[in-house]
Image (cartoon, rainbow, N blue to C red; front, side, top):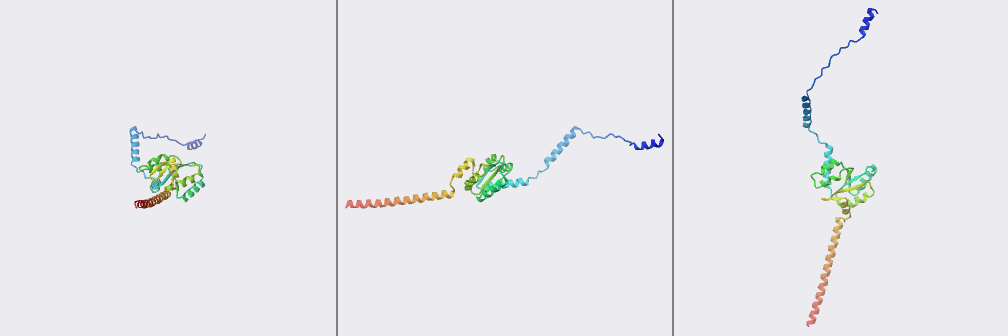
Length: 217
């Protein structure tokens, strides 16, 4: 091989140089300090409240305070969107609103209220029926007969908490207007009967006095 060819081959071979990489060795104590420093920074960061959860929290509190009837219910996943739409419309016609609620936020909103014992009702797929009038309970149960996938669990009526059986019993009671009418009829019957008895006694007393005067004469 000529000297010229040897020189060309030498130029094609790259010259590699290996330099050892410098690695900084950390002491165990420095790693611990770094972790503690990051932990302190994380604690100092103020977490902003979840605005959506706060809105739902306030809404549930208002529902509990502003409505006489609030019933919790469980639903199965087999209910279609059309069935939900029909249920909401039918309930709305009777003055009842349907609302699906998140369990954790609902349980949190019940804390510190007279209805805290309703917390165990919100554990799975749950929602609430609510109305400003408690006499809509019978209508609610009547509508739910067409929706076997929905089951009531319990609720708040006026200022009392009722179980499922208590709600069923409450629905059989007559409304306040009917009770007032029955009480008014009872009073009118009693007064008319008393008046009739008094009139009869007065007539009998008069006849006795007349007979007594005839006997003396």
